[in-house]
Length: 250
Image 1 (cartoon, helix red, strand yellow):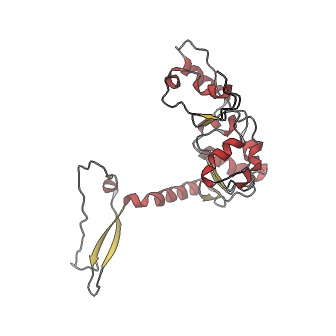
Image 2 (cartoon, helix red, strand yellow):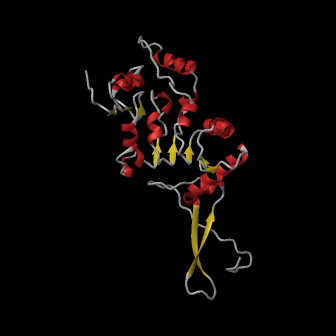
Image 3 (cartoon, rainbow, N blue to C red):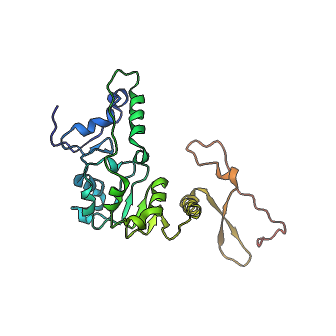
């Protein structure tokens, strides 16, 4: 079946997704297909970038300010030159891309194991590009989100290899913070701040001389914070105030 103008297709839940050992490679056999089941084919390029930037109202590559390519391995794309046309790109997410760091032998063995017992001839998607090729093609990026393996590589080699000249943060942590341990602590702090409203609670008290209640915020200990909200709750929690002096100032 020839579909020469097809650019993207999703077959999630289709029986061939689970029954075909070479399912992921199918997308590379269409003439113009760039996106296959939310993954990039080897032909991905300008159309793909504009597709993922459609909510920004971008009409051309130069209009794109941010892109989320998480879970989409750019190293499998034949031609990355379209990235250099993203002259306004400031924020890029290429995280959740484990296959970027696997050698060819590992990718081949995984595909072979998936096809084992099926009687099918296996094929697999390998990385066409290397990390440096990708990083040299995104010179305008200031804020990068990526896996920790790539973060460590960038921190160690960026200045020597002269890529990402405008980079300010990786995974929201300033590149001025060099120590990996300190970077990990900072990321944990940022992650906690993102989630704090899931754990923080409040109660209100009327204090002497005040006409209105004043809010007091608190966070429960590890057992309390592990209890989440539910559409079918089986427990109810209420704050207990410890006041050794029986005073609102405690």
